[in-house]
Length: 304
Ligand SMILES: Cc1cc2nc3c(=O)[nH]c(=O)nc-3n(C[C@H](O)[C@H](O)[C@H](O)COP(=O)(O)OP(=O)(O)OC[C@H]3O[C@@H](n4cnc5c(N)ncnc54)[C@H](O)[C@@H]3O)c2cc1C
Image (cartoon, rainbow, N blue to C red; front, side, top):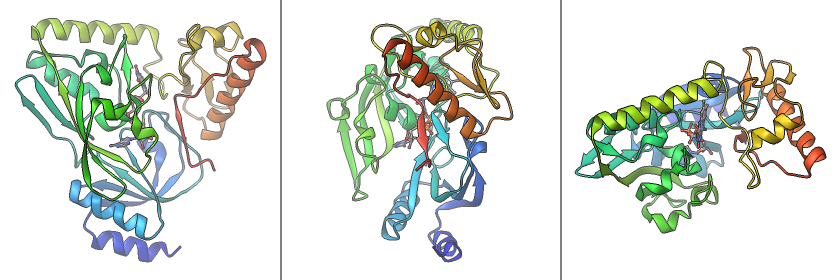
């Protein structure tokens, strides 16, 4: 591929800041990942449309990311374009009990901003370090609440680069699931939520309590991607991992967190390969012991 030519073309399209050979460890909470050939800080929706259309026309591999808080990029080069939406799509509009937030808005920011105005519903987002885009994609949640509980509708860029509106039913939300996972080329632009009125002080207290709870039960001061595995119906994934004696187990710089065994942490010198090997070891050990297949919540990128 003529990457010099592609760089020139992308610059001509006026998409926003373009970084070349940008290490993905800088853009993922696991702090691993090789360089992306192009990393673009998309400046607005029109720029995103132009960028996506270009990639499709030139069969250039591409992907949209939020805060990379659920991603395990491999150590090798990503020979394509990463579109980052956190700078260009970060508007929030509040109208009565309705909140519209663009894909790049951070969930923690959104939770605290809406709490200040007495809008309840986003308390579950308090400690989730992702964006609205990644959150809707995953139907992220905590403490028995998730995006589906407050979601009203979304504006999505489809495979023909048309903006379509999806209702809650269209989204097919389930446990850490939305329809976006079946349509990898759909991009969430903005989501609309229905909130409840509540005393701001009460909402803040819930947020603060949950923050404390997370800090006491999760390895918040280590690089991770949160829970590595979905919880099987019978019991939480961490119990299976614990019962196999894997708490604290290390491969290279990757470790099953001694604090929470469904977290794998980067002790500062892990490669992506260390982390994947540890994930596979956990999967195999749990299967050998219990005949239970753990399903990854963390998303593998660029391993093929
Ligand atoms: C310390 C820690 C705690 C966590 N706690 C929780 C928790 O309690 N509950 C929970 O559910 N998760 C949790 N997570 C995981 C993670 O934060 C969530 O999955 C989050 O929703 C990912 O958002 P993101 O913006 O980082 O998405 P990314 O990781 O950047 O991307 C995830 C996926 O979403 C896609 N995507 C991103 N933006 C868009 C868009 N605009 N349109 C279409 N697709 C898009 C990406 O292509 C990718 O496939 C935690 C992670 C960490 C590190």
